[in-house]
Image (cartoon, rainbow, N blue to C red; front, side, top):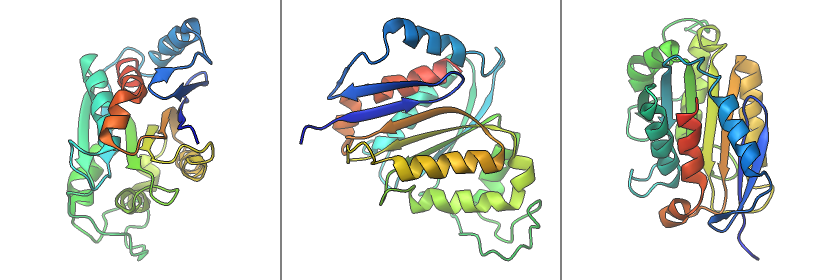
Length: 226
């Protein structure tokens, strides 16, 4: 079966681009691409944003496909003056939510780990939260799910922010990202977030494949056009 890669970028004014191999098949023409860029620039209102990028791949920075997208996005965002804080969930001391409700959905977690002491303060101040994950059994990585579950302790204070997701997968079927996309969009609805971008990089089972694709450039452009 011929490998096909899929990218969906969703924000203010939806647009979908399909990528085949490492080249761009013009489902949306150049004019539409430029219109998307212009629309994306209205997200920050011309002001510098505080952005939190949450990486969740267990692979190294040089090998991970999803971290590559995060790196490219970060380069784009910093190039226009946005402040980016990156949290590597796999390398940090984290604990899953125990459902004890000691936080009351609006207070300190019983765990004084990296989520509570390093990540949560940054997220509370952030304008935009970016979730980055490899696709594992059609969902987010366990490392990212731990963090998402810990949103519970500050549900109210984390609501109303902007959000984005970037994910990579080896599979290239048209339904590969469907479950994760539904999960993310339900989370956005529950948290009352405003989604500003989705990058679904299928057919990217290795670093060389994602580097040869258009996904890195798309991630960069989203960051640069916030």
